[in-house]
Length: 152
Image (tube, rainbow, N blue to C red; front, side):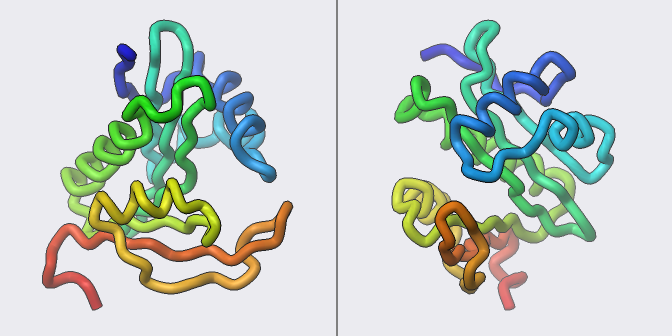
């Protein structure tokens, strides 16, 4: 599988919206994704496999803190290292921009994602009750501190 990790471009917006619909029960709209192109706090990366969008990750950085908003890989490209590559690139970018940690919410039942985050040094920092809908489910808050002394 040959793919490259690149910053989001206008041409990626509609394919990302379609990927959102494939992967999430409450997908982001075309407009919401487009808004990220002009949001100075947003950093979205795309895994491009030729002209296809194989996956993407979105983050927002506020006051030295990095929040992963979404990560998705198209079903036909799963288990090929794309999620790992996107996560690595997002972490490297956040660290390079001076963030002290990176964090996200994940469904408590999403064992493949939890395993990926754990493998990358994220730990459960808390739980949000009834965070997700369709179906209703709690979320783990998983966080990775870049500076070992930064964790509370």
